[in-house]
Amino acid sequence: MDYRERIKNVREDRDLTQAHLGKLLNKSQQGYNHIEMGRAELKIDDLISLCKFYDLSADYLIGLIDNPVSYKR
Image (cartoon, rainbow, N blue to C red):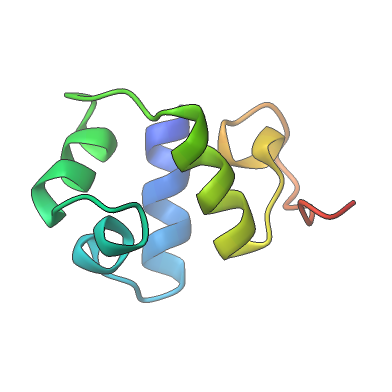
């Protein structure tokens, strides 16, 4: 699974909006949308923020593993 699809699915599973995640990452809703749609790359600092926020490993968020694991592991 592509990381864009994974972060979108996780966001939707938790009933969060793109605006909410944009605010978390200091981006606009449109800026976050560009990440999910592939018009912008996910920066490593943003990936770290998402891992902490969701309590999920980077491996899971970027699609290297399919089972959700805490980032604290």
